[in-house]
Amino acid sequence: MAASTMAVEAGSARMWSRLLLLGPAFVAAIAYVDPGNVAANLTAGANFGYLLVWVLVAANAMAVLIQYQSAKLGLATGMSLPEILGARLGTRRRRAYWVQAEVVAGATDMAEVIGGAVALNLLFGLPLLTGGVIIGLASMLLLTLQSRRSQKSFEAAILALLGVIAVGFVSGLFVAPPDAGGALAGLVPRFEGTDTVLLAASMLGATVMPHAIYLHSALARDRHGFSEDPAVRTRLIRATRVDVAGALLLAGIVNIAMLLLAATSLRGVEGTDTIAGAHAAVTSALGPVIGVAFAVGLLASGLASTSVGCYAGATIMGGLLKVRIPLLVRRTLTLVPALLVLGAGIEPTLALVLSQVLLSFGIPFALIPLIRLTGSRKVMGIHADSTALRIAGWTSATLIVGLNCVLIFLTVLGHQ
Image (cartoon, rainbow, N blue to C red; front, side):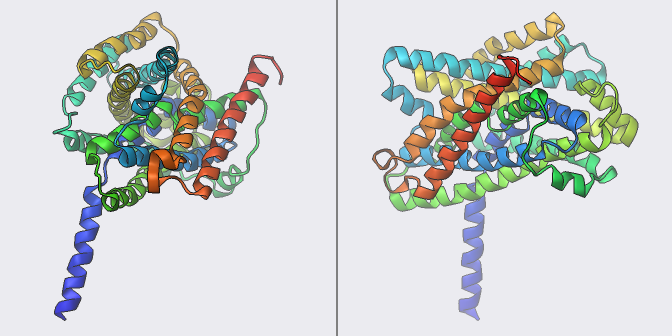
């Protein structure tokens, strides 16, 4: 009896030990449910119904693999992806690489501030520019939690916002359940013209986000540190699998819920090509409570993701340029482009969708080096990717690059 009790207690201790290791992936997962996702997924569902469900499923499967590899890189080497690239590239190549990574991070940050500003406009009627300033200031307060000593506090705040996001976008499905047959049919890969390819690239860029690939290696390393003991590293990497799987499963459910909600309640409704129009249609169809939940979810998404995006930008700059500026100073500087877009009166949803297409083109620059590094025994030692994992990684990279090439062919060359 005593032995049995001790075994149960030991098992419970192991479970709690693993739970205490969770957190970094949930911070990275915020990048997968940001306002860019909202714009892309709602547009896809409202315009094409369940047609592109398969894109989200495939993208989320790739995201699980990619974020696990990024976190494993940080734990196995004690360095972030930008730091490793910064040490390997010559000065010119390093600076050029930083420019493209910074453009991607800037596009991300712009989308997140715009999304938060739209949410404040929906909830309180605030002008978009004013809302953008408020989101910037609020994100500064959230970033003050982030430091090596208080990373757990930052993670807790982000996890709370992630919960709000999930409730905000999933709640509508309980009021208006989707058509099961239509949703299953949407799992069959296919396109219907240039617009669907453009949206697929936007959804992919909003789901497998470059800045999250750069960031996760630093998050895992900063949270757990680097151990010289291979057994400790192995235990941390195993716990990271659970962390990534749980975080990305939640993010995937939220993303698919957005598309299903739009396909169920917004298909064919006039004006749903914008987030504001979609919110009005959701409120009209499902009631004011769901409408408020939708807007609150969007607000939480913008606030959390812009904080994480700023953290990612600082990680990129520190690793590639070996230059570190305070997060709050960086937050102030990167807020300017988003405020310029809001002040210029550009339609917010269009700006969000196009920003996600830009992100899709930035994915290979982060993904290909990651796969090469995690597959190298020289870099990773005993933690190098298995043959199956390398094949899956290169397959994901090929599919992503292939979709971008199709997008170029259809849009730049003007083919239908």
